[in-house]
Image (cartoon, rainbow, N blue to C red):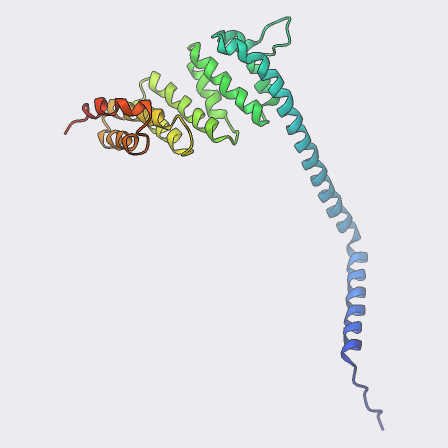
Length: 229
């Protein structure tokens, strides 16, 4: 006669599952340890890479800020070509080199906007557009400046439709940008030049509604008068 099978307690069942899981896990590890080691190695490399990249970006930001501070006096003095190229025999690298060496950092990207502006002010419009278009920083004011910069190049080349579009984009980046009213006014002017009177009126009305205290608001009626109907 067969002996009556002993009923396992809940504790014994739990312990049995734990033992089974342990041996299954150990078996999986033994069978796949090469793959596991490789995965752990890849993960470690990724983590180390992120740390090194973060440290490099922080270092580049700091260095770019120092180098940029050496260029700004020339830029503010209207010595744009000197700001672009740097000054031989001094520590002033120039905006081209700052962007080339530190363009991946936020302040390196700020230097890119200064470089684009300097190109624009010296009549090098294609180079200016290229730098505005290459801006990849995260600062809203600079994103808007890059859009406005592209718009200004389009405007000087009489591409008024694209100029209006990018001035409008500049005004829509951040509601806190103090230049929004000016961007909208420039958008309206270029909409008028491209005979897009609907969008021109909408831009001007937005200035009247949202930016009553701005200098641009004083120009609104003058341009509204240029819209047919």
